[in-house]
Image (cartoon, rainbow, N blue to C red; front, top):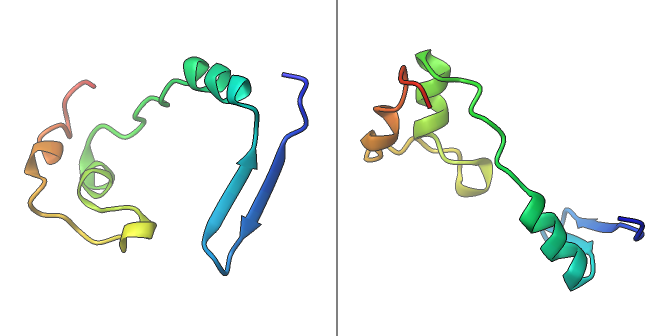
Length: 75
């Protein structure tokens, strides 16, 4: 990857723009792997599983009990 990476952040419009070629995007997407879950039990696990991200209000979703059942189990 020898291309120049251009990132534009517009806090007022709530946008982040990355300028890459289609080829570069495909290469990055193919090579991407989700990071391992580091928290597997306890209160932080419950929080991670039940609370939405900040862009969705960081609210607790008590209806998502399936995710909560994963706490304390090997991932």
